[in-house]
Structures are given as structure tokens and as C-alpha cells.
Image 1 (tube, one colour):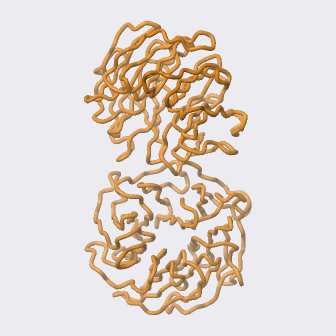
Image 2 (cartoon, helix red, strand yellow):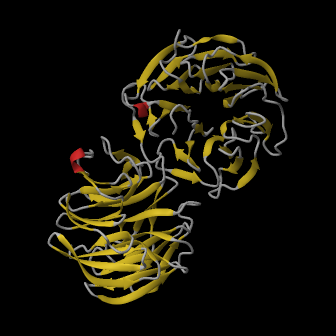
Image 3 (cartoon, rainbow, N blue to C red):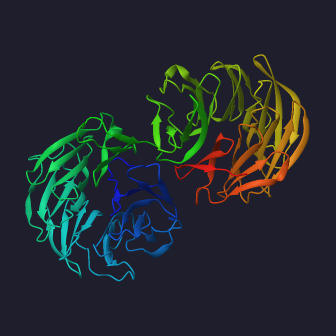
Length: 595
């Protein structure tokens, strides 16, 4: 989401799914159960808009480079049908004719801001010229005679007749950017909405002005999206004034005003009317299911990440696993029920930068370290950030681990810090090597730290101090991740060497055995132990996850393409047969393992 920029939500013509874009992904979700989702990841650049064809068999998605990909919706592989580059800049909107044979694409560009062409050949079927600035929105009348309307940053719209589509006249009633244009499903009307807070109504066939909605002002802020009801009698509008309004188009009046909040992140930048569902998207990235009978409280709010997920951990509350994940923008999300997609988050002000690591201690606190140079200890039962639970670090923390007795170990740039009960109790400076990651033995007796010097440094924890007894273990490369098994018998580490090898250090306070695990074809970055300490899982830059068995290097489960075109940034176990992974596609996936 971007402030002041509308977000297009596409609807499945059958009414079952809706879709939107995030990063380089197109997200398809079931409208009745949003936990049922699919992700398309084949774009090389940020995807800006996606729309179903009226037949429902294809989706057209456009990206920031001007490329449009048309791909299959009926197969899991989403095979590419056609690919075009109709404009040279960011694609802002896409529209299809009702026979799914022609499409219009608009946005930014150098020579032109829009194109209309045959979907199966790319041959032009008209000219969408006439604007001096980028075109924000386009729509096509869904019955004959076909008409196209567009809205632009030059504060005007244009009306086209065809095919072949030719400019007819300019729509110049707005005094600011025209953000959205939409024909009614029956084709009798179309509306334009703009940054001036106005919605204007026109005749769908002739383009003649009919009136406006709401008198002098439709909204007290810019209007970023509109969506018609299936019967063409009503529409909803999403505005920067933090409201969504339901309009009776014939009367020109608002039937209901949905007040979405008071924070700047409650600005409404997109909306969709699909069957009986009214959806809106907030600047926060939350998707709201609106309730006509209770306009001040949505029926459901879908929360989640809009930036890449960097870390995650699992903790059971009342026997139910909750998944805590932290992202690049400092947001921490709580996935309460993965089968329904029910999400939540902590209230208050949290981290202001990337969350690098998250673990839960024995006091039911989520311990997180961030690039904002802090550690946070957040009570997972209260679900509220507290200023008193922040520990400011002298250097940026890279990793944090916890053990019984309130112990925490923070590995920072140029420093290792031991904490007890949320207070610093010991600091190691002048390490002589660059530390990368650390882990505390579950018994709280030993701390292991891996560094760029290709060694594992072992420290004994004596009271409130870390004692360097000179014990090190040579590795094959820079240590990128490590973790003790829950029973404390093993220490697994991940290092970078030419063969991308894993080494499992079998230890009970002393080193007994060194076992190598080979598999990944690119840099491994994440590691997690199963609850029974019999297996551990690793994720890498090769998009693969391997599940390894202790004591048998040949027994492994390989999960390829876990997050297609995105590496696995972190993983965690729900139970001995269930694994969850997070990635830069801002998605969490659940995997059931069969040994």
C-alpha cells in the first residue's frame, strides 16, 4: 500500500474469489474463507494490478515495468498464455471486454499512457491518446456498443467509442486527479471519482453527464476507488477521509457511511462489491469485510504482512499454536488460526525497522530484536506493546535467543550482551571477530556464538557473566544460523561454504561428534528443530526446505519451490509433523510432513 495511491481489487466473475497485488506477487483468495489462497509469483518487477477475464479462465496482471502477463487460472501451475509490453511505465489498471477478446491497459509511459489490443495477438484495436499525464484508471462497457472511459492525473477523463476505439470527448468536471472510473454492470451508467472528493455520474452509451453523488461533496477527502453492486443500483466508494460510503445511485444520496477509524493508516484506498460481500482495503494493508447493519464495525478484518517476512516463531496458548512473524517494516503479525486465516497484531507502537529475530521465553513474552537497535519483550497475553519492555542496545542486534530463568542472549554488531529479566547484566566487547548469530543452551549453562571467522565460540554462563574459556569449533564458512535442540543434546549450525553444507554438532557440554548434512544448492539462511529433537529443518536461498533426521544423513524430506522465486527467510515447527515457513513474498505457508 502507498499513501495517496489507489489499490485495485479484482473480482472473480463467478463470485468465488478476489485478487490483489503485493510486491511481486498476485494473491488470489477465496472470498468466503480467505485462508484458502493462491499466489502467483512470476513477475520480475513489482505487480501493480491484476484482473480476471470475464470468462474466468485467465488473469491479466501488470507490473511496474509496463509488462502485462496473461495466465491460466484453471491449473495449479498458472501457465503463461501471452505476455505483452503495451506501455513503457507502471501499469495502473486493466480492463477486458465482456467476450474476453480485447483488453485495455493504462498507466505511465514515455510515448503513450494507454493501449487497447486483442488479447491473443497484441494487435491494436484503437488509440487511447489524449492525456498529458499518466492514466490512473480504465474501464470498458460490458455490452455492445462498446465504450471505454479513462481517468488521468491531468484532472480529466476521456470517452472512447469503438472498436476500433477512437477518442470522442474529454470529461473535465474534476478539479484534481481522476483516480477511478467504473461502468455499471448493465452498462447504463459510469462514474468517475477524484482527489477533489467528488463522484460524477454519466450515461454509459453517450458519455453525457447525468449528475453527482452527495451534492457539493461526496467525501471529505480524495476518493480512490468505487465498485458497483451487481444490480447496478448502488455503489460503494473508498476515500482518504477514512470512510467507505454506500450510495443509492438513483437518488444520489449515501445510504450508509462506514467509519473505518481515526488513524492515518485507516485511509481507504480500494474497494470491491462481490455478490453479498463489501470489501475495502486500508492504507495499513488490512482488508475489511463491511457490515451494512453495523457500519462502525467490520464483520471481519484480514490482517497480515505487506512487506517481506524476516522471522517467525510458534508458541502454543491454551494448546492452540499461534504463529508470530516479523517483517521488514517492523510489523509483527499474530496468526491465530491458520485454517481460517484469522490474524491479529499487538496494539501500540512497536519496532520502527526490520524485525530480525523472534523467540518466546518462559514468561510468555515475545522477545524480538530489530534494526532499530532495540530488543522488545512483549507480553503475548496482553497483546500490547509497552515502552517499559524495550531494551536499547549500544549496537544493532542481529540475533536473540532465550533460555530458562529469564536469560536472553543478544548478538550485536561488535558486541555480545547477556540479559536477565529484561535487563542487561553482562556485555562482551572487543571480540576479535565479527559475531553473526548466537544460541543459549536450554539449561542456561552455555552460550554458542558463530561468526564470520568461520568458528563457533563457546562461552560458559556463570551467574550473570559470560566466561570465555577459549573453546572454539572450526566450521567451513561463515555461520549464518544456529540452534540448540529442545532437549539440549545437540547444537545445529548452518554455515556458508562452496558446497553449502550443514554441520550438526552433537554435544552435551563437550563435543562428541561432527556430522555433515548436504543438500542445498544455494546459501542456507534458516534453521529450526522439531519439538522432539529428532528432526531439524533448513531453508535456503534455493527456495528449498529440507527436513533432516538426526543420526541418519541420508534420511531427509525435500520440499522444492516452497515460496516460488522467493527464498525461505525463516521456518518453525507447530508439531512433529507440521512445519510453517515465511518468505519475502509476505506469505506464511503450512506444510504437513510424512516421514
